Length: 245
Image (cartoon, rainbow, N blue to C red; front, top):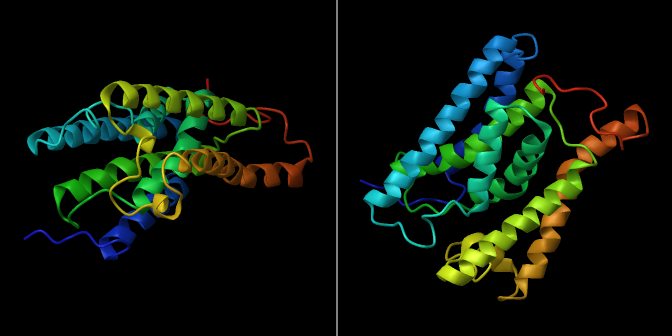
């Protein structure tokens, strides 16, 4: 018997905590900087799992006849975050890493906090949803804490530019399909932070402001660390992270 999903119930809290605790614990236990070959196998396996889970999620939507113009295209921010994360896991590079870092923490985390699921664990929708979203966050944290990868001041305008580009693409397809990617045409029909915002279209400027604020907040630890160490945090790649080519 399916149990209705409970926001911040036991399974939900476990999924949230696991996305943060497991990758940090794995990084501490594995010490990927000292075991490069094992790290590569782990990253590629993680990427394969994320791809398989995304395919399983789309198959689930197809089986339940839930596919439609509003979800059959990879135009949610979490879809783009998945692409950036998988690309970084397979081919380490600064550009996709910084996108996955900010999109995971500023966007995907919100999806995990207020998920669009009907039933609680162990329903397959619950499992796939949280593996999908939690996997993005876990991969980013593993790469950050385990391999020392990080954003730089130069990352901020690039991430903001790509985010605006994503919003433009999502808005264009919303217009021609009558869809609601990125929630640019309407608030989501389930409980989210949008409930505390003004009605459409007035919440869109607020979304932009929150996006900029989130970017600053998630860069702040690195800014403070750089200031403490040298007082000059404005040079990209002061030390080369492990794995970058």
